View 1 (tube, rainbow, N blue to C red):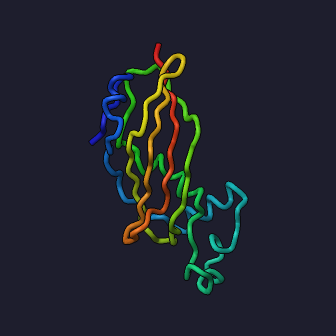
View 2 (view 1 turned 90 degrees about the vertical axis):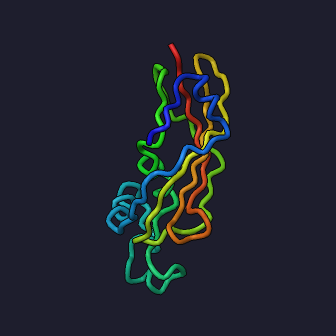
View 3 (view 1 turned 135 degrees about the vertical axis):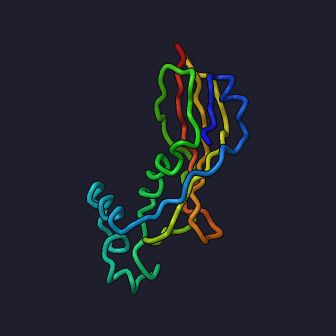
Length: 152
């Protein structure tokens, strides 16, 4: 179910609230390889399946930045901003990768509205995302994203 964050007051009314969890998504070697190609990060712990078997994680792992970049997919349909003329991604704060994501793992993300601050022409919203790895006590990623929603 999509949580509607309608207008400035609608966002403010959700500060401190967890918006829910998105669906589980499997992290495949193909996705990891595509990310490596897109970013030029071909470190063996990500792309060399045979060498990684003897490495510190017992197999290949997703790039931390791949996990971070999946947040949009992992929260698709979880919440929606309405009543604004446009929105932009303003940046990130406090990004951490507490545990690796082995290829073949399933991950999902949850979101919490942390803050809603006035800016000229709209508001800056701080959302905290937690990416869980199925079967892990620690999250795979915790990140605060800053979004700007404009009115008028």
